Each structure stands twice: as C-alpha cells, then as structure tokens.
Amino acid sequence: MKFYLVSSSPRREQILKNAGYEFTTLCPKSQDLTQKLSKFDPVQVLKTARNKLVGFEEKGVYLAADTVVVVDGLLLPKPANESEAIKFLQLLSGKVHKVYTAYVVRKLPGGIEMGKIECTEVKFKEMTRREINWLINSDNPYDKAGGYAIQGKAAVFIEWIKGDYFNVVGLPISSVYETLKSFGVLPSKFGQIPG
Image (cartoon, rainbow, N blue to C red; front, side, top):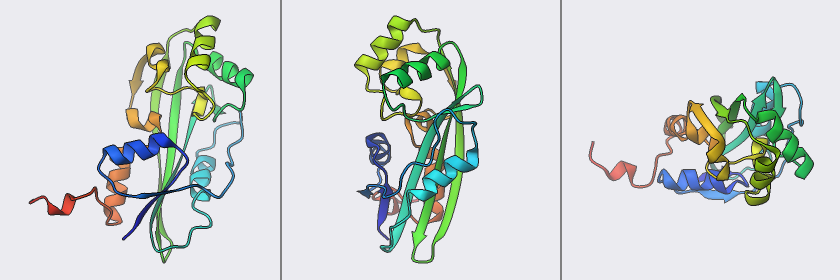
C-alpha cells in the first residue's frame, strides 16, 4: 500500500523520515481555511487538515495535518508579514500558549479515515522588542504557526513545554504512528524485525 504525505512542510517530511517511513510527498491542492486572530475552534483545524486531502484519488494511504497556535483564546496561524509576526510574538511573550496539530489519515479507495487533534502547552519567556526583531530577522517566521519554530532560534525563549515536542514542530509522531499502524502503514523494514 503506497503511503503519501500531503504537505508543504519540510518539518513534517523530516519527522516522518526520521521515524523510518517511506512515503511520497504531495502538495495540497486546497487553500488554508484558518482565519487569522479568530476565536479557536478545534473543528476548524481538523477541517483544514481534511481539506488538504481533497482532489487525491490514487489508491493508497494519505496523511495531512494542520498546526495552529492558540493564546488567550485567539488562533495564530502563519503570519502573513513582518508586522503580523511581531504582533504574534508580542502576544506570546511571557505567556503559556497551546499548540494544536490536527491530522487526518485517509485510505483510498473507500475513503475510510481517522482524524485526531493533539495539544501541547508552551511557556515563552518575556521578550523585548529587540529580541522579537532578532528572532524574526534570523529565523523565517512566515511558514510557521504563531511565527516561531521551537526547533529553531525561538528555543532560547522557551521556558517549558508540557506534552509532545513533535506536536509543536508540526506532527505528533507518536500519535501518528498508532493511527498509521491501524491502517497497516509501518516504518520501513518494521515487518522484517523478529517479534
């Protein structure tokens, strides 16, 4: 059974590769449904992940995901420009926020699917405007939910996290592993190891 990752995120690709999966990456055909600075609705994030699977009909198992950052009930997706990135990081400064990744696995033909949402809490240190400017100018914020990458330079401002680190990066691989296993998709050579 062929396995496809429907994503334009190099981070999701890397997480799956590091876990030993063999897959083909496809670019989503749909537009992002997430509204900036809107009230958080977990159903909307799951809908965005599901929407990325629209238009694919080849036989196989497909995985798509969407990650958002939520602070004070507001949803922060990818910032569109520098002023938005500054605004997002100012909102995150000194606070605990939540990172939600919704993912959907679908098997074709038949359209059997399973969707899940994982949540991780992250605490940022207080950041000065100079630190925010440094972060934006040295660590591209525009393709990352909330305008930061926990695995990048933003790591120096992270006080603590509670939950799955990889969920913040963009794919909760432990949860994804269990879901993919239920669809018969395992890491490469997994079946060749004696049990």
